[in-house]
Image 1 (spheres, rainbow, N blue to C red):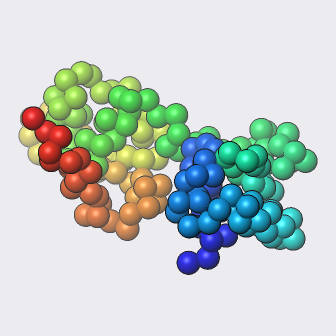
Image 2: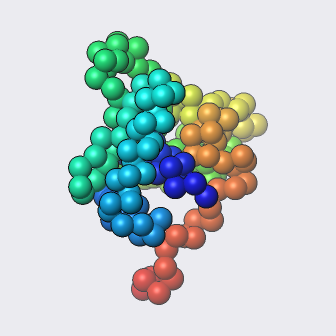
Length: 174
């Protein structure tokens, strides 16, 4: 795979600067080669009139917006969808993703606390939606994740969610 594509994609999805050592290990290049690739990417961005560039020093690099459009961006920047979600909202989102369709009562029962605020936040960001009502007294609303949620976590289907516990080493469990 093309090293320029890998570096630019990793920086685009990262939540901040990435250490050069990470790229050196990933791509099997030294720091001098890495800096040359970064310079080529920045040249490509300039030729393509892209609104950002890779800012770097000898230790880390990050994608940042060009100064000539920074002021404009602060006026038009759309609100982030996943960034800034609180821990309770992320917990609620995970419960809905794995248990859907699920009622507010079941979400709160699993979390052990009221989840109304988190549900409102997730709905307002378009990550969950009402999917009907449960056919029991009181007709509680059922919640599911949305297509936007799948897009933001890069899944084609909710069936592709990782199995709970998949990323934990079973030898660490006691």
